[in-house]
Length: 404
Length: 227
Image (spheres, rainbow over the protein chains, first blue to last red):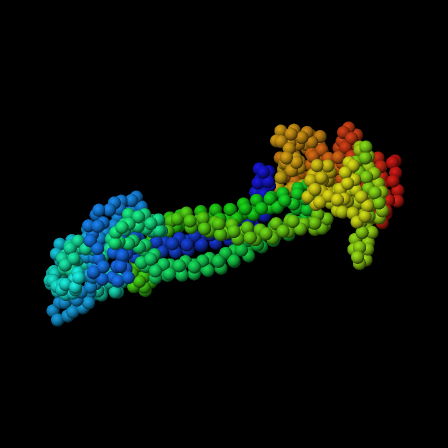
């Protein structure tokens, strides 16, 4: 076998120029494909992370009817969770959240608002809410944090008093006066025009719903490990009126947009692979055409066609491996750099990203799967194209080959 | 002992359109240790006959027995293995593997025969020594002269310890000096080790050394002499 490998390796380098051209074309396609997929997966991770942290968590525990009918009456007593052991190495953290709606008034202006009761300290670590603060003080015991757009519409500023009116738990009237202690700026217009954050206890008191929460949002180590963890938590919640949902179930639009983008990315990759495929096929074609006489001689002196095929297959493998290796070596440092230094967008592109609620960055994912996928894809293409040289060798006629 | 026996061998091209008999009803046997030259004008069928003896081409009629074994009914794969084990080939254009050194070219045949490393080492060293090219062992064909390449080709043909060696115009590309040196080696191998050589040639120097001369004209044997 060593002689076969030696023979194949030397044959690969017999036509140095052609080997470098073929290996380079493979390397560049792997390079571009890796960068493209890394930025794609990085963006998805970022979108999932943003959405999960801010809205749903990777997993959300709710009262069983809550997701269908998101009203305060479908909240649950957080005491039920304290009795359970939710500690697991796959769970990074969890936060309780209570949400409802109310009318927010200041002076002669009134607007509808979404109320979020959160543990401000835990939320700072979970959803990085503190980073949205643009004015005032984040840590408040009795005050509220208002979205900048809503504050502007109500002509409110830090230190002003806000009046909230709404319906509390089981239909009781809810009304209260709160001091605005901070202004938050959200990229998502809907949030920026209507969100009010309160300490959890403050909102529970306002809604006359002591200890009640709408959801317990859980952040996982791995955003894709949701099904396993869901099953795990379901066993813990057995017998309770609580259910657990994954971010995929809670954010179906996000799942669809990721899938759409992922498959459109693959369409571009397939076009790239088809172009590269023609290049590789050209090399295989020449590999056989130029060496028909030589292959005939090998067969004549006693090398069976199967062995000739093995030798040529090793050559093909070495050539493809060289190209894939070069591509991965070229892509790795660039992906590493952008993984730790995401591309910061500016101008219209940044605005568009912010409008959809995402950070205006192009993050890169560092995942072995990216290199593996590209390498395997190229090898599958080469394997498919290698059918031609293998068939050509099988059909080789010694006498005809010796006359070439 | 007969190493080759041909009975009523014919090769007909285009049998269904305009049949051309390249070899016509040839019956011939070659004994072990012969030094035979097949001669004749260009196009008389020398190479075709050699190809059929070597199992590279199949006959249209008749039979080819090598060492008492009929090769007519063998499959392509069986024929290739049979050639590897029993027949040595020397071609006009040397046809060494360009990316292997002289020594590796010789060992290549033994690798195909699955010989162990020690046997290969000893055999290749011995053959390089006998061919007088031991100092060229690590050179690739492109770094060797025509004569040296053809000696490597002979060594490669002998590496498998074949029943006989078929040499198709082995001296056609060589100068006089290289031709004489090559023929000396072959004659010595024939004399001392009883290795059977069958040449196709126009070269008078080869014909002069041959112990048996078979003359072909239009695919038929017109004379078979032992000078």
